[in-house]
Length: 204
Image (tube, rainbow, N blue to C red):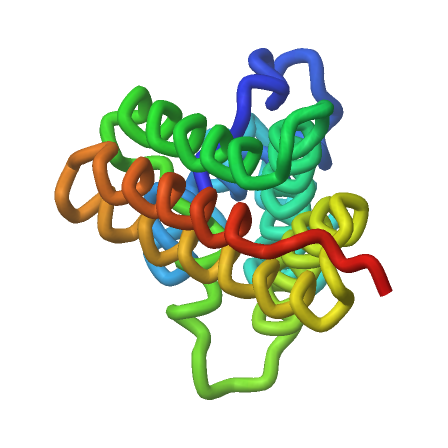
């Protein structure tokens, strides 16, 4: 998913390892895992290949794992902030979808979800990349689930609706990129808001 405005704006303020991770996250976001080379990462991070391998002896896969974890936490922060507040969870989820739509448009439709990109490119193989992608998705679902539980949802409903929310947002983001339009995300946001609002608070 598009990265939020809390991301570091100046790579120069970061140490070498952090620069490598941030640059790799951005490149995977725009080019995918397969399309991103370790030499390009080193060049754009203003680091030597030797320093990349010093921090990441596992090479490109190890860099990608750290980059995906970084991107996952960036989105988690945006999601927590978007879902915070006193309003009901339905409007909060719709607001998150709207923020994603704006961020995607402002990126020129190129800053998609690096987690999804890397996961799809490494399907069929058990790898650290698949593991960190799965952890990212579960982590996002837990954030939504906790918000729903705090709003009186029954535990089973909270789990299933949270899974629906993240799956729908991920799919709508890809559709928005292809269509070069905010509308898929805004439509999904409205429909998710209605879905969440249709549940009565759990009193048992």
